[in-house]
Image 1 (cartoon, helix red, strand yellow):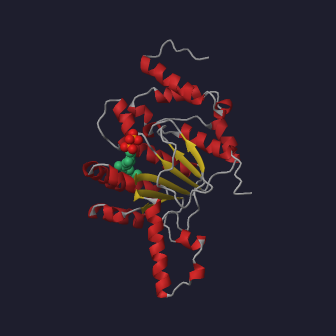
Image 2: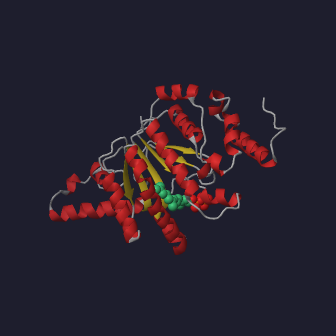
Image 3: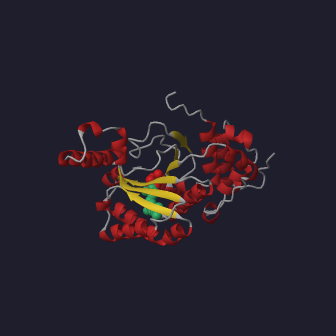
Length: 297
Ligand SMILES: CC(C)=CCC/C(C)=C/CC/C(C)=C/COP(=O)(O)OP(=O)(O)O
């Protein structure tokens, strides 16, 4: 039983949103305290929403016994909407905090590969140059700032996408971070920037055509495995098993996983990117574990 008597208007609004979003969720049956936690988390200010604590003690045991995905992909949508709702100016810090929480959860849960769709090729084409420049500038700064964190935690960073669209200094930072983290083995963290899966397939096809021309492979060698090996996402890494998208609204994968999409399990959350926390991550994990993955059987 929860008393709403001492809550202010926005807290009550947040509480009813959480109820609307979750009242049919199977998750709630297993987590009766989730609403209280969500209320505490969602009604707080920026600082609190950047530092949610999730009491997963009982819940996590059953998750540990289940299948842990090898590769989780995330689109953290809703940064601008979250800022707008608070009357704040454009800033990607709340997004970055959510991104780094995602990295922490993947490390904590022993997930070997994590991919984040930071900025799509479509975004570059549709948004103004000024907006893209600010965003990619911030990407460079954040990457540099997080290097120590990646190194300390054994995270290997890969950036995939049209790197030539990044400024020279950003390309140099990407190279530096990839080089500095290349011996880390706990987590492969792939950042898709100016990326489109269609373009990735085009590049892979060109590389294969070149090898055919040079005679290093024969036509019969061209098969699914060969094409996959030539893709920058995922290359030799495992295919994604779980896809998470925050931000409500769009229930699609976008241009991220054209080739890899076949057996991925989809999970959509209404939380906006800065509100992403362990509650959302674990709900996605639980939802994944409840699915019967058939692989065409
Ligand atoms: C190192 C590292 C990972 C750095 C990331 C830095 C960075 C600048 C990320 C930008 C992410 C992004 C495009 C958010 C957009 O949300 P949105 O603008 O699409 O929000 P909306 O869905 O509300 O429109």
